[in-house]
Image (cartoon, rainbow, N blue to C red; front, side):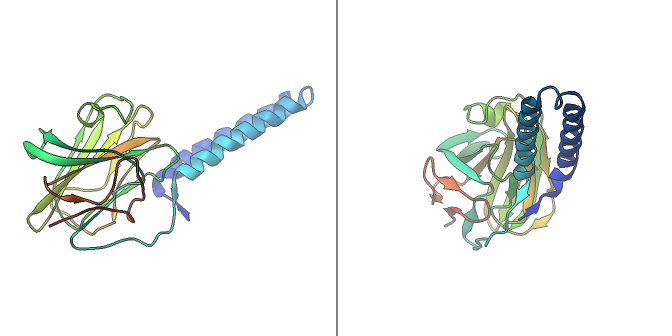
Length: 219
């Protein structure tokens, strides 16, 4: 396991705060209230370890397949339904949504290989990620990947806590399946919009792994 590059700055700041607060606790609290000083140390250490774990990048055996759509994110499947996409397709699509808790790995990956047709950031609200309107009203970044005659939209959505979406794709790029698409910090959601009629290989409330679990099979 390694640490993702998006975490270097956050971990450095968290480590600095951890060090400063514990030094202050040692010099001003430990002599008169050693128990309180130890509690402060344990709580701050727990928070630091949580932040480090959030940016973890585990080694995995990725799944590949020309007709497979691989999960772009870790988390739990919270939506499988037909929707009307007003942003790009202007028509009906099959939406599969993955909720990412703060405990999940937060790197996002390309579900298919192909050409990037569209990449657009949208400012928005910070509703909780499982809110029905989070797909259209929250801060988000949408990309469309094309492979053959199939176009798939992947939408990174900020949640109530996550307020920074990083996306690495630009129109015209040729990308490989499971390469990094981007990163969302501290809890969020990823929507995948598929052609109607696509065979979905996951179920509601199923735990999935980005780059590993087969989300759908293309015809």
